[in-house]
Length: 402
Image 1 (cartoon, rainbow, N blue to C red):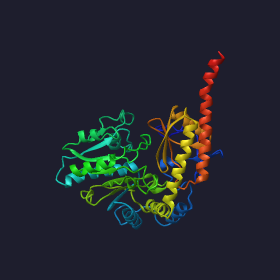
Image 2: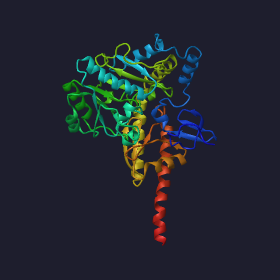
Image 3: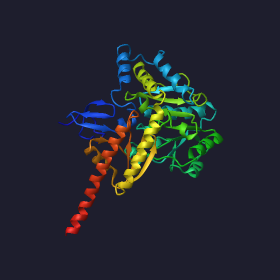
Image 4: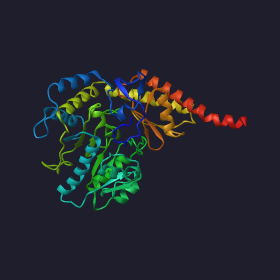
């Protein structure tokens, strides 16, 4: 029977009925090791007791009231996010794309409030992914996302990732900000060259620009620090986040310094659902877990172990794996064979991973994953690589026989 859902996704014919930690149970009862984590969303895995308890309690009290009134749960979450980051202020959204829209508007409004309304352009980078709205696909600049949607939204100057000279060339009198992911996720788990982010900070300071870090995928512990910028020694002015902060519930936020947000006064921006009691209760519960003593140390330790074990697999299967990339539990494998072949081989081993650009597969274990789950993943990746190698050898054997 055909689905009435708009066919904008190439969905796998697989559905799940429940989850337990790092595992998903399909409707036919099969258990899958989930190293997709809802595309880096389920930082605490599935059905985490703390999140279940928080959701259940709040659902019996209050879901939504609108931003016409104060929302204590949102105020508490904003206070906590500012306390553990560079930020002075937070705007809550429902998604990463909305958090990026807020950041884009904030950069333009900042320049206008600073007496420079002609400064509206934002420098972005090839391979970036910032969302699926008209503005964020223009920021990402990928032809496959822009095709068929008419003229791209004006105001974005895209340069090669890691090319400082190119950044300097495009900065002009209309430039307002620089927007970058501290690690590109969809772009292939690409880490910027050493010193690149620091050089961007210096350029922004010299030219009066805002530095904006898209931490939708890297934030909330994914790289082993609460936010990836902490690992770089570089502090942004604006930082959109989402994904992990809700632990699976739709929630995003745009964090900013007081200076960067000075133009965002009453009436300049809004959201019907953003920051409602139910969503921000879940955000607080996620922070409760991620900020517990030892939690982020665990992510660093397990992330290091995972990369070491993956490096061993790379050496064992050089015809399948070309490179291990990433930080913490944001890990990528650049493949020798087409990455979709590896995704399919892993799914046959009952392990779920998403693909990315640059012929990469991404590995997003929940941050609660331990040595058992990592060991299980290594075993399944090993088997999948071996299956691919046997398939690659078949034509050679057939040719030899002839």
